[in-house]
Image (cartoon, rainbow, N blue to C red; front, side):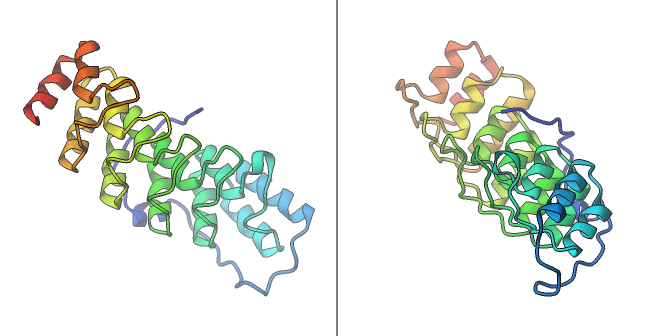
Length: 231
């Protein structure tokens, strides 16, 4: 999955929402009907990360849940561009943070997986389904742990994403943090968070190996010591 970089800075929904000033969008039923032109204008505004133009397109009648390339909604498009101002405007205007594209990515799932914490905070405060899963049958916490997005993992755990969910390939967040990690301090931080939140180190992967087995075979000495201390 192609990703965007993140500073992993702690955020709250309030600080995320203050990233842009959103003009009021008229209530449902007041706007003219959506047209291909207004929807094109909306996607163009999203691609420019222009919140004023997003609001103008919505006011002109653009469907906030219109589908573009790859069945992306404007919000999913904004999220995959890490266009925070546009995403904030759409979410505050009522965009569905759980709507998925053809890759089974929603704004919530993608921002969680890629460590886009400003957008993630907004999705969490606007109805994100923390139990939703991606195309691999995994929660947002699993790829966030795989990529060692330390603050993102903290946010997702606090939001109640299940820590012991097993995805279709047979991985939990803990297993992915070990198998796809490098044993560095960031991964130790993530693994510590997961264990503190109740991650079960006895769960085995599809090959029958535990997190400790995988850490030992990869020479991740700090992770091995941590897991042994929790056994």
